[in-house]
Length: 398
Image (cartoon, rainbow, N blue to C red; front, side, top):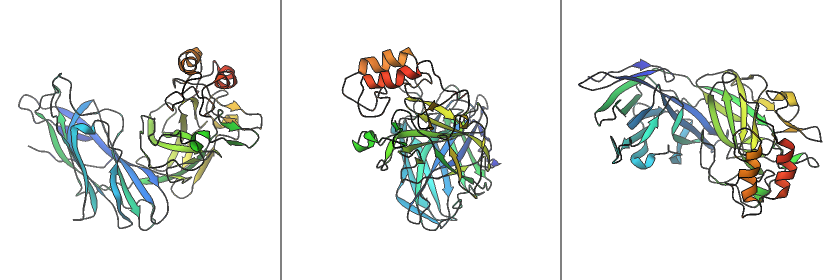
């Protein structure tokens, strides 16, 4: 018999297997994380619907309702950035107005059970938060949370393969109690050593000027797609928040680093409104870039909904966690260290021999990470000016 569980959005949801042989148990959670907030009437507001489980399970289908208030109206494209593996599914998002206005997210697997090779088909739900889809609206009236609460009459149902991956699968339906999502505000700033110009105290933007920055993010935590790259962008970066020193990210957002060091979103907005189930508290701020060493704030940063908290990595070495985690520039600024050509968190011989050497002088592409100064070419300057001085360095992010 189908069970219903009354739990909050962030709570653990027990799944009861419908199997004649045994009753299997699993848990899954849904949450919403704001990914875009233009902060202007007529601008875009987007939130990622994310899922995670207590163990790796193969998802065959799901239904989730996401209500919202009259302050938002449906965007022209209401759904984007679907999870990888969506080719195995029928996917849709529709607007329903009874009893409240909400988006209904439907995912139905076309390859339930095993593929011909015996490999489970479809989307693997793991113990990490994974985006199902990005939901988008147009802002009609400015408001903090836009009433995006999972209400007591909001349905969510999931259909998983069971432990032996047979077509007979776990099925349950649950309801959620009202869960007010907390919005915190952050405006972060950092420089990349490679494109930084000490004469102008800003980064060069050769990749943007020559249209070399792809519209798809390379960061697996948030591989989103944008329609255009904001003016003055140096490169894509990944912004993350952690609740603990060495814990997993509780928020990840692919965004852009402007020439003046300011992090911006696809609309050029400087301050991020971050909707988080963990609420107003202190978070470690982490910044990652594809061929520079990642940095993390030296201490947790208190974030709240009332004010925009600024965090500037560029002003002092001790703004980042660890021992000499950044490059001291000759004009007194500090920047993320260049030279990590394979993105493994260290600058070493592998970055020279496997990333730079085979690509030196070849046709440039974004996938060739040995362009350490982001000028659109791979040459001796990248090796001698950036890799060599940082050889032996490693990220201090735990």
